[in-house]
Image (tube, rainbow, N blue to C red; front, side, top):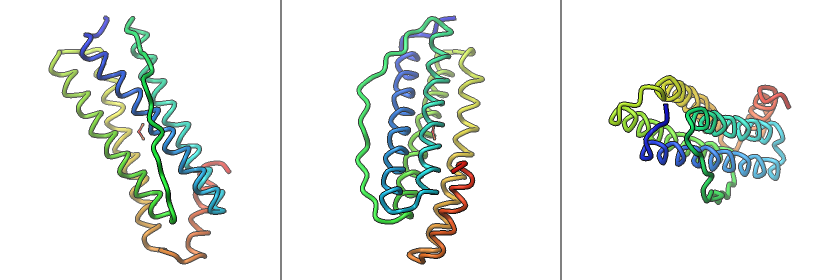
Length: 165
Ligand code: FEO
């Protein structure tokens, strides 16, 4: 069943936010490459693809229901980082913003009684818990190693392995 215009707008905003996240992660991948950290760069690039996947999931839900997703003006987030801690700090802050936006989507879907979007929004709520936890754990480890080169290289190796680099 087609969703209401108000909920459609909220879904479209979420799609644009996921694309914005994707661009943010892609930019962080560039920043890490420039810091000669190919493993961390690969991790951010693979995460950028995941965010695109999130946007696609939401787009598919709308088109399946005969709603009309329209991609909006997407801001490319400006990031300048001088350490891996800063990069993961930015990522965590962005994930927290996405989580809050998903919660608002849930609240609105409840308010308008849209049952059909429930499984998808539930999936996103669970996904956000995992995403925040993953980024927060890497950030914690980045803080532990600080500016220690061998510690940073170890994180680079590990993340490179997990990103399939
Ligand atoms: Fe799709 Fe990491 O939020």
